[in-house]
Image (cartoon, rainbow, N blue to C red; front, side, top):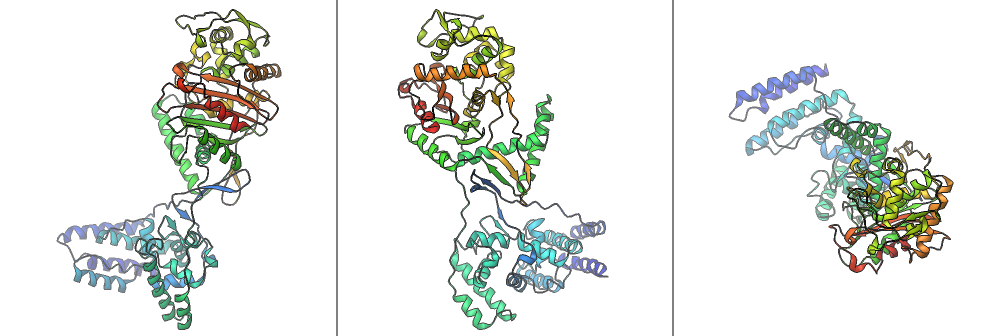
Length: 616
């Protein structure tokens, strides 16, 4: 009976709403279309809400909150009675009795609007307001208003009154990207709504009526004046006494506005990118994308992946990371202090040797969120720092050679590729150790040619070099001559294989949980053996000797061991160091975003100072 009555009321209201306007017949035709919509039953669009993504450091302390809107949904039973009274009395006294709209209120609004020749009076119920928040624009047109009635009636058929009221209290806008009464309490007073006084509750209840006009941060007095009117309404309805009303009006309101936690943007930016990689991996999209040659299909899969990621992020998740906040702070401060007051930039990545986790990452000088993150977004030519991965370790792994084996350091060409040695110094027969620590290019090229390009890349491709492409399979790759280059993240990641010969991609994320604390994503921690113990010992010796008496002199560590390889690209456009101590594996790049020569600062060895600071 109630449903039939609802149809009758809506249909009867149509002529009333369409009296005004010069195109009456068009409006009647629209009305007939709306009647057909009702008969088919309106399909309510899916509602999309966004909850925060919270990042935790290695101590399980929050260091970053990522959200476009602040929301903390509450069950109706968790919301104090005084809150419900404030909104019922001020917005919709007949809420529990009407069918989604109030005919008498619509009539009053219609008369007022007719007299003013404009659409100003709303006569909106709580259900209609929920419809506007969820489904419709706020345009003041009769067409939109009519659709609002249809949707409101459909919602009333679909949900109970308490369910509608709960949705309303959780979805209304409180300004400053805050949605819902629960979030408003924590945002403006830093306390849950159950701990607010009546005065404070009425104060935030004043905001949704006009979030701009009643923004308590910018228009405190406006909010306070409306709060007092709401308190008066509580008195009029007998919810509180007049004496209590005076007491609440005179209570001092002290805002304690929640500041979004946004510490360590270099680390949080990378962790969020890694989160996307993790989701791609474990939903199967990465494999599908990698195995698809068709560009259109690849693009489609990437779009589908992004939808999947967006849906997961909207759920509100907790991301637990390996961030060591003190180290991150110290490393950032040190690098920013070491870099000169110029356009010179740097990136750095530090991996804990025991856990193989990324404990510190530096995206650029004075890095701010959304800046170019040079540690993983800006590949550069690695120069000789690439040789341990491309030449020496594969050579030891595939031959019986030792560091004392002999290799020639004289001029050497393969086809038209005839590299020079640093300073155009030529050598006769030298040990592999000498060739390594003095970074003799022609010796490295000879060893690379002995290994073979295919074999060398069978090792290179076991690491996470995302910018290395098929056309890099050349002889210049032996010396770090690549199409796009590599990042400090990738270099530190690959060098971690020299800890003990085993490799697992270094990660920042330990696990991802939902709001119930259930783990929904985590990386596999299985390690793959890349290098034999013989190769590892040889490489660690070479890296250590480079620091003791080669191109790495000036590096130091108190950990008991240090080994590293330097890299300088043509015309001194990039300086690199990658290496490890007993505690950490790290890689450092310095250069300009628009490459240019840094020869004038070669002696300053800024990259050495950075490496020493972040690994000691």
